[in-house]
Image (cartoon, rainbow, N blue to C red; front, side, top):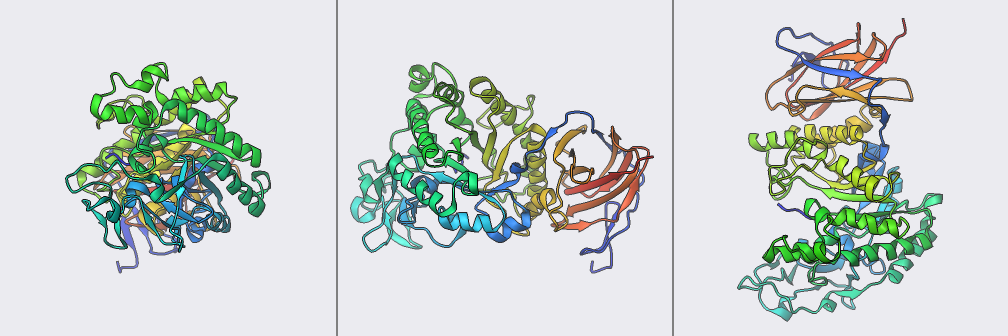
Length: 551
């Protein structure tokens, strides 16, 4: 995880009369205004939607059940130094470089406890295998240790006054980074053979992947950022060749213990980590990227991630899932992730284009066209193996407690399905009942009975996806068409006119709407002549479930 960066019986919301709670409501048409045309064609752009795109990181058992979440990932910076024997971790720069015991808190679950609560929630676990070469250690009495103890290295600019005052942040009073620390202060060396024992333990307790054990083994976390996050043990940026070889060795180790387990890599942090090795990123801080050593001497001028794929292809395809992380870099998520100023809300509305749009140029330091999912698919198809799944195992656009965060999350999940992503995990699981949580629930459990969005993506076109976006799918279980319409506009209701192609031209419809922080079931109704109209509140997400009737 690396960040640069009213009481009345009824309420009238933009044309729908909504009764609080589960009571059905009547639909009221709204006259006037120019409708937003949503053109849906069940005969075009058809492809399966992977159910694994609705995953989370660190979901509790209860949350996993309520979201009907398919995947639960244990990862992040602490996972790089997880010591399975001691059940200890070290979050590096994120928390004063402290090695300490894992606890019952969900964010401190990395081993058996995580597998147990994930399985109890009906999801499949993804576990991170340390590959950095060090794991956390504790003192003989099991107490925390600090990589930059003030008692050893003097006063520092900050320390953990809330729990472990001797743990400094590794920056001296004069602002210089402490570089002469002993990595053995709070960590011990670790090898692939050490991690092999953990996998043997996991298989012995839970079974192998083929018999319901851990299905996904992630090889560490954001290796090109190790020198920033874990400089206490990895002060020099990781070289491109070193990461290529490490992944091959650890993948072989995983397969030797659990042959059906899926190896997931390289888990890079974002745009800079797709293009440059850790060594080159560190070099560029003082010298720029023009003569980046690894790009010049090791990757033959190629971007780092596709170069890794060429190496792994030559080594026999050791990676089963090609994975990355992505966080928008305009402040949507980061230190000000709760920012809901109008400017930030509008930025969230449009910056999801980074995931797909070949005509959208990112206006942050990236200053390029990201089109992440098509780009990742192209890299894998060209430089590795076109049958390999692609994953975004960490993402977050912020604004979790706001409707802007909810419309953004709904937009993201729709994009994942439309663009053919295979696996995704939101960082982290949203707070239960939050607007963003409810947006996810609309896709997987809108009715409390695991009712969800369809499993075959079909064409849904809108004039301006920054204002109103829409996604559509067919559901195999009952033949329904599901349409998710997202009015992103901050204060303007939207009248929409949905035209349906290659689907029954009349039938019944149900609707579930997330607005003002709650999901309401709207009145059932009908549609005819291949057209469905609705008026949607500002900042709302509405799921329509259509059942066609043959003439």
